[in-house]
Amino acid sequence: MTLSTVLEPEVTEPPERPAAHRVWRPVLWSLPPLAVVALIAVYPIARVLTESTETASGRGLGVWSQVLGSRSFRDALWRTVSIAVCSTAGCLVLGTFVAVVLAFVPFPGAGVVGRVIDTILTLPSFLITLAFTFLYGTAGAVNALLDRIGGTRSLTVDFLTTPTGVVLAEITYFTPFVVRPLLAAFAQLPREQLDVAASLGASPWRVLRQVVLPEAWPALAAGGSLVLLLTLNEFGIVLFTGAKGVITLPALIYTRGIVTFDLPGAAVLASVQVLLSLTLYVAYRLIFGRVTRIRTEG
Image 1 (cartoon, rainbow, N blue to C red):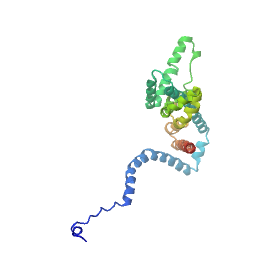
Image 2 (tube, helix red, strand yellow):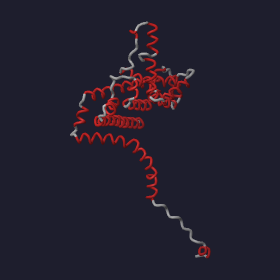
Image 3 (cartoon, rainbow, N blue to C red):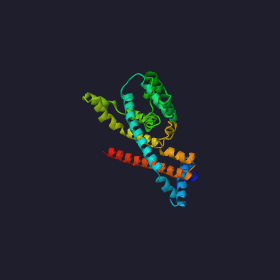
């Protein structure tokens, strides 16, 4: 042992922090946002499900059997699904066409059209319905023009209060939800692929079908799934069109819970609505994940 080692103090490293403390710190930081989400989103849904379950058990499943066995429920369910499917199909067709034109067909004002589409995403749905009313309503601009041209009421346009009017309004409002993901997918598509396909003599339709759409189908599937979920739960458009004969599940829930104050029946219908939406969402995630995995492995 030398003199220097005797005189120099021994340097000790600070003790390491307990592993348990490092593990629990992220958990503690995540508790406040989880509490907010549970209070705002989870609690109302759980409350509705609990209300319907307690009511059903207290009456021997009488409310469930009465509501689910009624003709109004079957008609509302069929109307909801049919409108949602037709609106989603229309949004996919129109949204794909608009996105392809904006991305690959340069024309003056394309940037303005893109900004207008972004603006529609920020508007409430009832504004679109009001615009349809001003245009195609009984006293709207189109009927006034037809009346001035033909001078007779036989040319009156009267589709706004029908399922067709609801579908057209939903297509108008929800199409941007398909256009935006497609434009983002088209922006990531290498232009070299398009140039090579065109130089080999492929027609524009073949390039679109074999080069563009296969690369953009995840965005198309995501936009279509989002539109399907939104149209299944859409209430504002159905209400503001004044389509009294078009009763969807959200409209029936409103009628049961607010108009007739049948809270048990409204809770049962709301439970069905939640389960339907969750089932579609889980199915979409499973199918999308499986197809993506297969495509990645291939």
